[in-house]
View: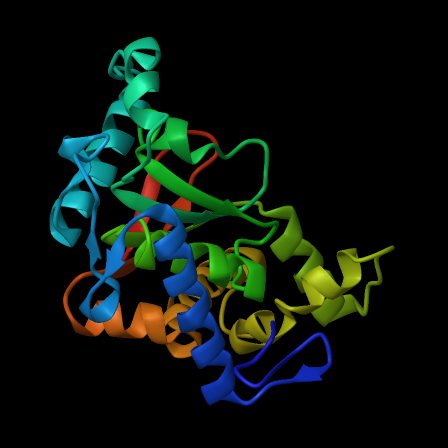
Length: 248
């Protein structure tokens, strides 16, 4: 995983990196027709496409929890996609951002019983924070005003398992797969020898490391959290049941 001063071999001063990200977010906001306030607060120009999504961080977390309970039970809402297309064609105001693994078995929109325009989802194998993911989530905060970011890992994650094999067996993988899984090796090293199930422990630690990386690497995330505008949480998706175990 890239640290706060470098990525892909290119050194960048932290202050300059944060300045560039903040400037980029402001440009995004201007293009979207919104005004940035303190700590990434957003003033929408005109009515919200989905007024019911204008919720506090605590309310947003509650919606995620309740949506997952419906999904697990098999009693989900009927989503009227046809009639909401008009409103969403003019903009979006999702109530949560999700950093999820790219695994085809994990679909955040289903897992939280959400509709179109509800979740702003960034996906990468291993659900870890790289520059592209971070920029996407900063957009969700600075422009769309999401009150929650949930880092969603899942059990039996192939990307984390590959990182475990790199750390414990010096495994190698073709193409860019090696650099992707190598980013998670420091996480694996943190929990080696601390659990009988290294993959499960590394999966949880990987979510926690991503949660910590967001405010550490982004002034936009840090300031929004400090102002009470944003919560950063994590969870582990269980493949057999669909249940998300939310982390403290």
